[in-house]
Length: 272
View 1: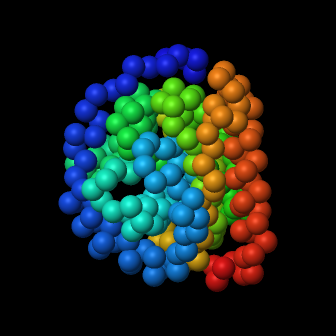
View 2: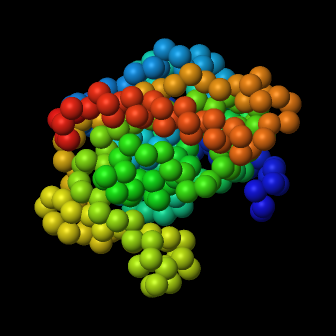
């Protein structure tokens, strides 16, 4: 499917979602992560109170990224578990991995425009990380950089579903270990693109020291701060026929400004 085509919504993408299982995971794991990362989430008061919305965020922390559960905990604390689910779009390897049976029950589904469109049309809130692994493995020195690697499909998804875009930014995740390089060239040299792997990241952390993707080091207790920004009504701001590139630039500039502000307030690595 080309970027210009709008797919028909997939059916049944929310059939496996379980508010009860989601509550158990959030209430058991959420407090642990919030304490470990001394997590703060600001701006949930501006979040749309009802209906579908597309949350667009930067992605941090490598393989053991904590931002999904941290945002999810804040979302469900505000809106509860029964009104509308939070659906997270993930790489197919996540939903097919060891926790593959659990993921759909807690709202984690394979990333595709069809799945996103169907979830949004049902009134769910969809969380997407356009930068994916490319973003979550950005070098630690680029912690405060919004970089989606040129991906703009999220804009088309929001336009097609007729929902607002809610930008969100977080800082601190790239300090959970030292992210040295994405390893783009090495991945290309080894032909990993055949397995849908465009990067082969090199990190340094605890307890394994240097790691080339695996084994995954444990995340240090860095302070993670998340900020939710004002929703963007795409049609109201950009007209009946929005230019995708223009919308993308606007969203990323909003996010970059907010992330720069969070970075200026951050005093020390790890400590926040």
